[in-house]
Length: 254
Image (cartoon, rainbow, N blue to C red):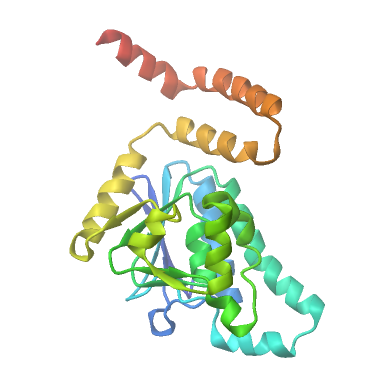
């Protein structure tokens, strides 16, 4: 594993906790931070006891987007250098999409631009009532390009277009209305609500969660017939897992 300087990472009680730890920079993203998140995600995928990954931000904000120093460099960089930089974030999104465990984002404060993309790349988003979400890239002539592949699958086409075209920052309640996030909790209850949610998920069958996530995302680019066949195969595999066998036994004994 990498030496982590910009995240906190630990696994306990089946939950891998990844905390962006640049509160003085509003947890702004740079290449090093992205590499450390990728490293933690990869480690959690191999950790036998890990059932759920929880992604949070230290301090008042989840993640404010790209580090300003990095933005300055992009103006001077050539196309190949900029492509390599962009590809680093794309690789993180792919790692998260293919991760065998559910990844939960707990968002307080602002999740903007790349920070909103990072939250959107998670499987479930929980938010404090005062949280804010948005893709303001258009305001500086930029495009939230990599996350578009995920955003388009998360909300309606028209909702996605308005988010990226207007650059508007929206409150958590509005984000929930359009389907961008799952649950909104009062600020004072947020930490306890997040702990309760991830603990309930960590208590579920690990094999069933892994198979469910894999099958759901596998259907992205398949035909109806192929999706049904993938379902047949996953169904058969699930029946053979120890979790399923024990679950059926418990059910039949009731």
